[in-house]
Amino acid sequence: MLVHCGVSSPTPTSKLLLRLPNLYTFSIRASPSPMSSLNFSSSAPDDAVAPSTPEPKPKKPWLLVGLGNPGKMYQRTRHNVGFEMLDNIADAEGISMSSVQFKARFGKGHIGRVPVILAKPQTFMNASGESVGPIVSYYKIPLNQVLVMFDDLDLPFGRLRLLPKGGHGGQNGMRSIIERLGTRDFPRLRIGIGRPPGKMDPVNYVLRSFNKEEQAELEFTLQRGLEAVRILLLEGFNKSATFVNSAKTLKQLG
Image 1 (cartoon, rainbow, N blue to C red):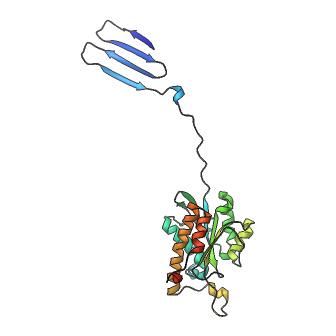
Image 2: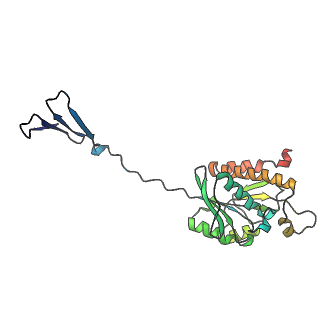
Image 3: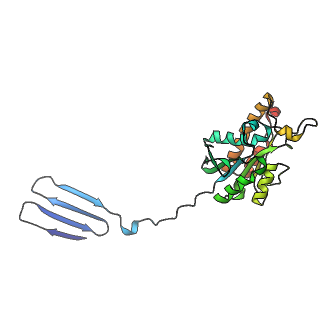
């Protein structure tokens, strides 16, 4: 410890300066008064500074895509249940879909702590890849974090299937996305709309709206789909697939 005392003048007041190397510097002003004032400041020692650590890289977002056709004439039709599923997710998670980017109704937000991008391609169903491909490329989204939700004629109405990869199954929106991405190795949530009755043309069937009973079943299905997506993002594919693929429809529950 170094102590330095100095008197600047023969006045009744003198100044005493004490220095503690690398720890503290403080000064005491002495006076004939019974009280004295103390001014105290501190600085951390050089060897006590914590080493800087690199900040963790931000997580890549998930891309959630709902397939359908734009326009009022297609609303509430079987072919647009992918749109409805995505709208249900956006509403539940408070994500705005008001902007238009990459030829899609577009929104960003989080599910839990997981960043997500929501997209409803506005290209019409058969050209969905023109929207999805550029989003994946621009944001460098890993393919195992691209979830496409769409209607499936081969599943009974109200049933869901979560798969890690697969073909398009005759669904032209999926066909377009697979062609644009150059791979079929990305997850998808299939939403069952059932087969057309009798000899009805499938094209006409998928553009039909739902009756009252079907609408109630659909609302139940959309809620299960929302829960499935939350489990997928927060707990992983296997848990979500188990939840989805073992779930019963509203009709089965009675």
